[in-house]
Amino acid sequence: MISRREGLERAFNNAWYHGAKWTFIFLPLIPLVMLATSLRRRFRPQNGFAALGVPVVVIGGLTAGGTGKTPTLIALARYLSGRGFRVGVVSRGYGRTTDDSSLLVSEEHTHEEVGDEPLLIKRSAPKAHVIVGKSRKKAAKSLIREFGTHVILSDDGLQHYDLPRDFEVAVIDADRGLGNGWLLPVGPLREPRERLSSVNFVLERNGSVESRALTYAPKRFISVKTQQTLTIDEARARFAGSSLVAATGLGQPAQFFTMLRHMGFEFTEVAVADHAVLPLSEIQASHDPEYIVVTAKDAVKMDKQACDNVWVIDVEAQLPESLMSSLEQLLDRVARN
Image (cartoon, rainbow, N blue to C red; front, side, top):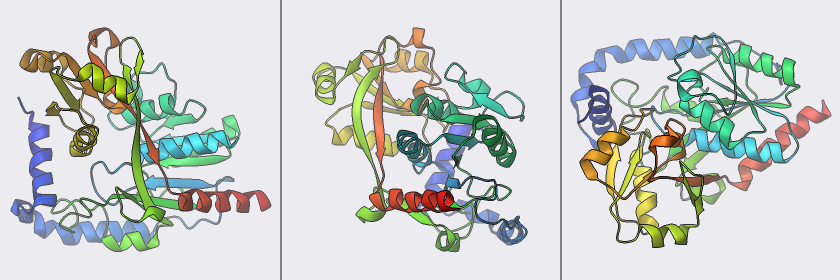
């Protein structure tokens, strides 16, 4: 059964990306939205280079919903940690049930305590220090003070103007683009499309231009309960001829389903609202699958003991060399200063 939230998400996405016109009832709100976004940018703090003492890299988006921001941040955190930099990550912690005060994320936290994406970031890039909090600026200062952080990565902070930044990465979906091109709630845009001209790098998921394309590389399948691993070929052999369900609570579930089909899997689709916990018992009762495949974002919200037949696909974001080169130049500039 579709929840009210899931129904609303589908209705808005249908309007924003597939031509339905019903959201134009909100058209009278657009002047107010434009005024608010304009004032927020106009009166944002003016900061010099490395205003916090270390470079701040913001990974964000112009549209509501998933475009690949979190996988991009994880890939950057792993890369920079591998280069010997002490990496700090700041996030709002969407969906956390704790208060808005800053909280240092550990791998032992639950998604209720810190949010699913910060928990996924910490587990995927364990060398990075991750803090959730209402104020990204305060969280960043705390990381620098307590851990001697060399570089700050901000998760989905493009519109959080209180945080000084030295480099902005806007991640967009090349397949869906900017939808109908209207601001929220008529369209999916958080800010006018012209905002893209002011960021340092536009990264396009599934883009056709190699120098700015974000792609995903499936690596393996991992049992959520036992941590057993399967190569892609081993998973194909195991799942072949079995009843398989692919289930997810991503902002754009079609991306997940398309990837699995391109890998040769046949399955039944189950999609719930973004950030929602998958209802495993309902999926089991409705579909009686031999296997269930989920994303890493879904897996961090699961009770391992209830996951006998659940496998998570381990996917790595592949970033263009041009982005890495730009970040290297930024860090070199800090070192020279």
